[in-house]
Structure formats: C-alpha cells, structure tokens
Length: 186
Image 1 (tube, one colour):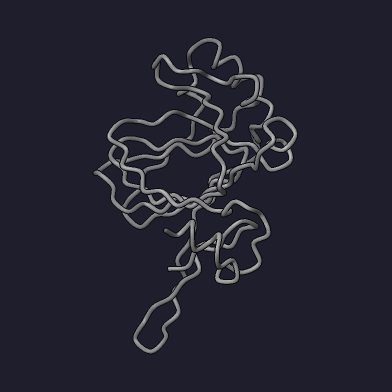
Image 2: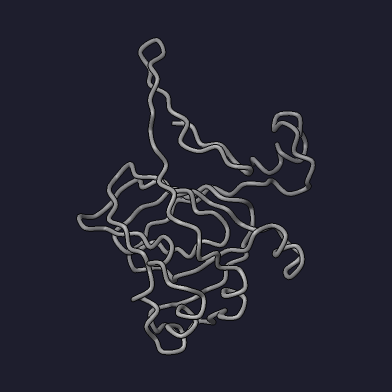
C-alpha cells in the first residue's frame, strides 16, 4: 500500500518529517448539498484540537448544469452571521458561485464553504479531519457554532485558481495552486 511505502521508504516523499502523510486527496460525488463548514488554521487546531488545521483546494471534475459552490459569505459581519445562524437564515449570508467542469478554487482555513449537489470534486487538502459544521439544511447533525465563529475569517474571499498554460513538446502545463501545504499542477 502507499502507506507502507511511505513508512518504509520516506526518501521517496521528499522532506516529510511527520509520522503522518501531510495530504489527503478525495473524490467527492455530491448527490445532495453538503454541510456548510469551516476549518481551523494550524495554530487554532493545535491549541484546541491537538491536530493540524485544514486548507484545501477543489477541482471540479464534473458539474450538472447550474451547479454551485458556496465559497465565503456575501460580505456580512460576524455579528450578522451569528444572528443569521440563530434565526435560521444562514443561506442568505452565503456566497454562491456557479461552476462548471474544470473550475478550481483554493479554500483557505477560515473560509466558509460547501459543495452543492450535482458536483464531482477532486479535493486536495491537509491531512486533517477537523471540520466545524456551521449549517446543515435542517439535518439532525451536530453544529459547531461557537468554534465556527471563532475561526471564520469574514475578510476571506473566494480564490479561483487560474489556468495559464505553457506548451512543452506537444504537452500543455499549468500550475493551478502553490500554497504553504501543497502544489497542484495540471
């Protein structure tokens, strides 16, 4: 398995010093709207959860017509967002973006986000399962209001990743994302 190769041949993976592989890659097939959530940064996650934070990137593998992502808020303040949570009006505070196959976004820790129905997403992320659910469309799951409000950065905006291709011997190449945690090339 890849985890066995990682354990036994660390030299193949660069300079990773931690015992845990630092990335997760998922394919998410959203048949329904997924919960609106936010992830902490490394400092908060270490202090509160004894874990790593989570920054992630999304690449839209496939999209139904009129598919959307929720990325960030619509400019509301922390107080307005808290009031919307308490009054059941969270959806009115969320920034919805129409997407199509091939779109990509960087989802920094602290950015409210959700994958909506009709999307297949490749998600590249820090290897962390720390997720604070802000809103879940009335489904009976735990909501993490206080922790979410602690970490949401209301100044963060959606960061669409842009393809700037270069040609090489019949191949095209672009660097979609270079963050502190991962690089995505296409």
